[in-house]
Length: 156
Image (cartoon, rainbow, N blue to C red; front, side):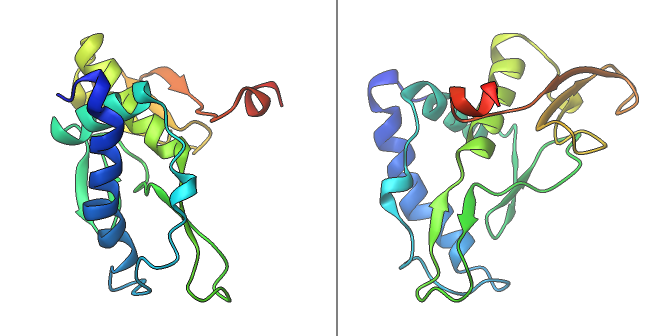
């Protein structure tokens, strides 16, 4: 697990070296990393630590091409947002909400002891970003969480 003081550096380095190239160079996209806006890396140390814990602990499966899911996920998640197709190079930014969602999975599993096989991203109706279920699967929703990246979004 990364230490608090170096988590942001580790997150940034892996984002640029691993996750961004996998996303941008995926055969379904193939537009390269040139359009990535590094100023979009606005993540807290807290969220970086927890995201790295989830990724390194195997809580989230890397499906390739910048797509991720966990045991009870209803959708594949990606951590980048794509700008308009007309942009050349196509703009790409870090999408903070899925980063926070994946980090929250780590908190539930590793800090609170929630079984990893009962965690998911997106509820069955896609109303919430994160879900935790009773034994037996998606009919037994216990925790539903909507992730917002700013207090203003929460207030809205």
